[in-house]
Image (cartoon, rainbow, N blue to C red; front, side, top):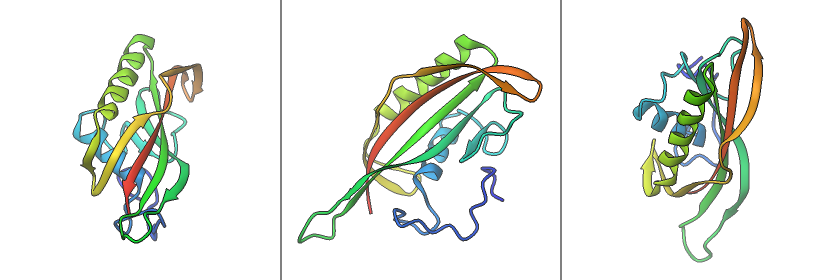
Length: 152
């Protein structure tokens, strides 16, 4: 089990330019570097603990088909991801979600984690999912979705 709370043993994605590296791991790395959480404590990849009242979860959600440049080795994949933000205070959660969107809107022709991204852009605004149940009550949940183009 990794610090992300996600079992990465044997992970080898077709879309991964670095064996064992995924878009989700790149995004978790960026969020950690920018102070949005600590992996395994309030920042997770691929699942949301039932007890999480305040934290961030990155879900890899597929994406569009790869882009092939014929006659060149310069191919790209187009993975997408969703970020879920939980916070016991509505305003604080919405602010965090807005900051995350602004963070990724600025990424173009940049290495994130170990991967070169041509761009990352939001494919939705912040969406309030309302109150959700957690083990000890309820909390506010927000969602936003992103699309990418990255080199293979």
